[in-house]
Every structure is written in structure tokens, then in C-alpha cells.
Image (cartoon, rainbow, N blue to C red; front, side, top):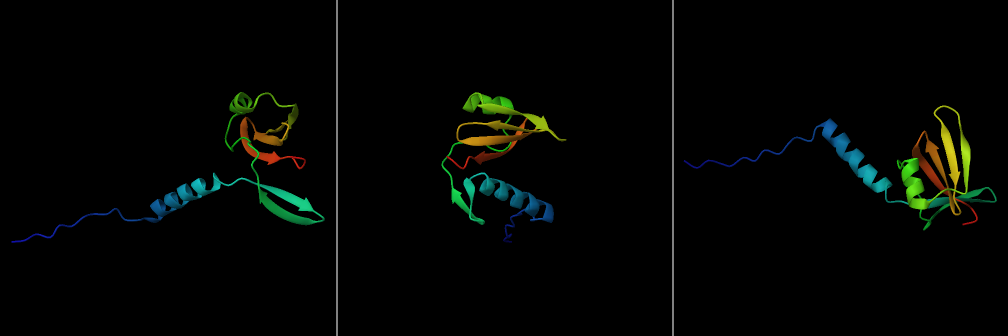
Length: 107
């Protein structure tokens, strides 16, 4: 008697599909760098080569990698939002984590 070999592939459940989609989105979002430019009420986005901190970095890591900022603005609001200014960009923190890094228009 010949037996057919059956391979079992895990089913792609909605939960696994959502996890896969989230992982792929995180990979995609982490690779883009751009800056928004507004001129005469027109908004455009262009790629930026300015090296700046990534989302999720801590204040300690940012300072270790980029040095002390030119200016540290005091925290405002709840949750606490803090801004550090560097020569080519500004970094915004929520509590101690980077939420955004913006290229300065003059850069």
C-alpha cells in the first residue's frame, strides 16, 4: 500500500495575517527619509540625506550618537513633549523617546 505524504502548513489566521502586515509595514516605514517643504502655500515632500535620530531612540542614545544639542527646550504638556535643536535638525521627544526628527528648512 502506498501512503501519500501530507505536509501540514499552518493556517494563515486573521491574527497571523495582521501580525505579518504589521511587521511588513514596520520594515517599510523604517526605510523612508523625507522632508516636507512648503512654498507659496504649496506642500511638497523630497528625500533628505540629513542624518537624524530614528523614532524610538532614547534621549541618552541621541546625545551619545549626535552629541549635546545646541538648545534644549523645556518639556510642555502631558505627556511631556521636549524639543532639542541640532545644527541641521530638531528632535521631538515624548517623555524620553524620539517621536519625530525634523530637518530644518535652512539645511
